[in-house]
Image (tube, rainbow, N blue to C red; front, side, top):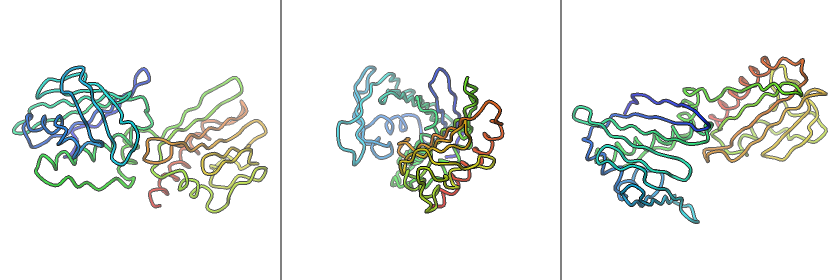
Length: 282
């Protein structure tokens, strides 16, 4: 079950995650496991109903989730080579090729949320592990990711980098990162019991090296903190819903034209990496 390759490409606002796995079973057996709803539900992240023909309707029902199921549409059926479909706004393509006495399974998942890529990759990694167990005739028992697999994919795909935008008002630094713990746990790690108060100095956890603390401008625990680090600059932490694996962090810093944005960018990169590592221990 070692991957031949896991790659990520982004173009025109869409990201494609490509994952390859060798399975020790012939293509027709793999085909049945990825198209038969009775088998899909044993390894896929939802129960599925499908009209197995181009244009056929699909529904995806998540265990324990109430409300209307998500829907999709079959885009390709070429037994036993290719099965592809939409899932909401995403597109999934499963290609099966003979490989000796087994098969090479290639998944291409195309989606809009690039910063969710590590969540999707770690999730599919576990799903395909369960698929392999099913094909082997074993119980599909896969331990959930506690965060280490997610962070390994985040590093592999280099998703921790921030950007510097040069605006008319000065540089603007921005980081977006999917975290592996919910907002309340992230907030607790950032505050360490020192709850921020408007007008008072921001707790140290919300600062980075060479980015001094300053008065809190806005706080809404556990999802928002903004403070002024310079008369002409602010730092803003926001913790949103993300992919469901944990909170989605968006951090921005603005400042005067003269401030060293590259140094601050490196400092925030180190600070957020340290936060992510601490969350793995929580």
